[in-house]
Length: 124
Image (cartoon, rainbow, N blue to C red; front, side):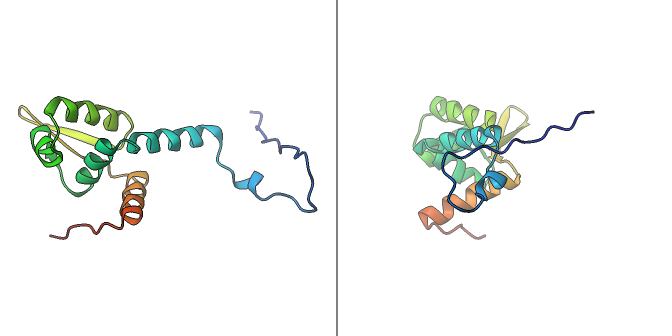
């Protein structure tokens, strides 16, 4: 098996020391993934739904009531959040329930949203 080596870019200007950024810069796939997740949360309605689902598991009807949106609009946003891996769903009879995915990325995004907005999480 041939091992791939990452080629160091040649910088147009040398300022006397090697750039540490070339060693720790995320690859293009990672950057695109993060940009896609941030794009999903860049919509205020999706951000509100994401924040809500970080704190509880809910059905579409209750999410619609809590966010003051129509059920079809909520369903649309849930589909986008789910396809991004930010939320998960489970079926109980005829009802679908949604909650934030339990992943390091989602926990980090939730913490970041809380810090940026200076929101305190509700405690039971």
